[in-house]
Image 1 (cartoon, rainbow, N blue to C red):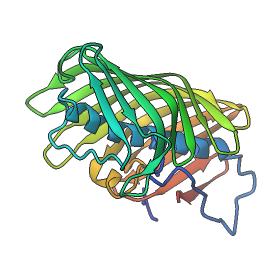
Image 2: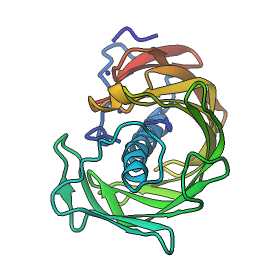
Image 3: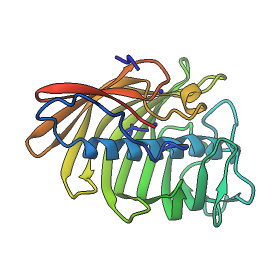
Length: 275
């Protein structure tokens, strides 16, 4: 339920200028409110990877591997895409850094290794690794695999299995989180853009070294029209975060493209606006 526009989004993860955020001030905090910094870190992770997905969908299509019905890749000046069909490798190179028209600054390289000749074929996969890759000053490391788990041609939907191993996101102050996921993204394709329904789990350690698990309860919905306006926060869905003896619930709302979420914890709840 949203009563007040970063992922994830999770997953669900980044700004296209949302990687640095703050909570709205609460003049009347509820006594016993737990430390929510771990939950906030997860929003940065999700936004980072939503930004990555948005970019990779375009790169895959631009490279002739199929997936979406429109091409909107907008690499900033000085960046490049190198596609080696012999080794089935695509390297997206942002060099020392450049800023896209919507305000996202990226640097370093994204390296894609794929199987098959068209990502629309079940079983086809794309594995992503990084070399010095940063988005708005946030460094991303690890290995991310996308596997086509099935396609519904009648309804223009593709089911993608998503796994992140050895994930690590580092802030400019050198604090970092570690991150792994096992999720499914059901992507609906249309001429007007895509919509992703995300389910599954994630786990890792926070910037203050707290171990946690995150479970999606009701599918997180990420819409391209929201992403195009810089909103990487899911427009709807719910999930829980568990760390120590604390369990926190997060409600992303009822479908509006905004950055408002509701967090529920033992003894109270609060709304947070992600900036």
